[in-house]
Image (cartoon, rainbow, N blue to C red; front, side, top):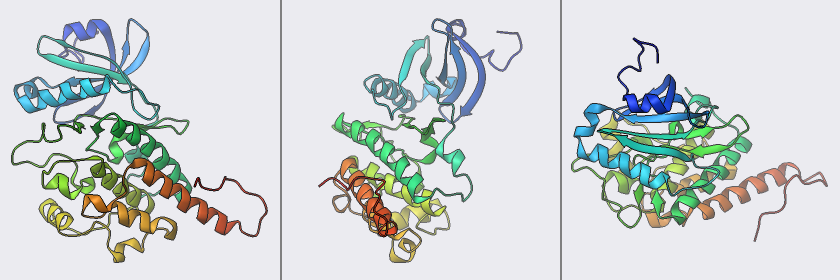
Length: 299
């Protein structure tokens, strides 16, 4: 590495294995870099812990948990882990570099997706979620920033720093602090109750509302007010549901029910509902035509 670059503070052992090109993101726990893995000549997203973060046990535990979870996952809609390790007190992981940006980039501001594009997005997201839940993992932080988009249209789930094993759902929750992204969090997550896959179903419903409308189904003066409103009522009331395309209105309302047992049973159940609703909407528009672009929904 040339002397005097912004990467001089990175561990020497990591710089021996990776040629760091640029920083592509940063947060409270650390930073993510675009890099080239020298041994294989492939570009990766290299995530490193901040030195001062390592003194916080919960942060270090989350990073190690993310490595443990990603090492077991292999699915087209989940960003794969390539490498991970520890040099002294420095923790890092290397993942696939997805060059198309995030869903957040695509819908920045109040931009929206149409119903066909939203359906394609949700199909892939829910396939990834179903795989996670089948393998005993709750993502717990679904949001546009954590959905990566390949140029060809493939959607990949990323950032498992808050993901939890279903059999031990409270292990990494900090005392006195709500962990997650408030706008997408299920009420039971705010209340720090045991979590199941339905917490991710809630977040998926909120995501669908956001990409279709460019806004959220609530008004709040600040974060505290937002959290209070979410635990006191269902997430999508009638005055907000009317903003949605009629085909998916009931689906989003059900996803955002306050009580977990009132939501869809699992990601596949939600995916079937979205497919059926969008097929019915398409067939209604094409009723006068004899040609079909899709097969009828599975029974």
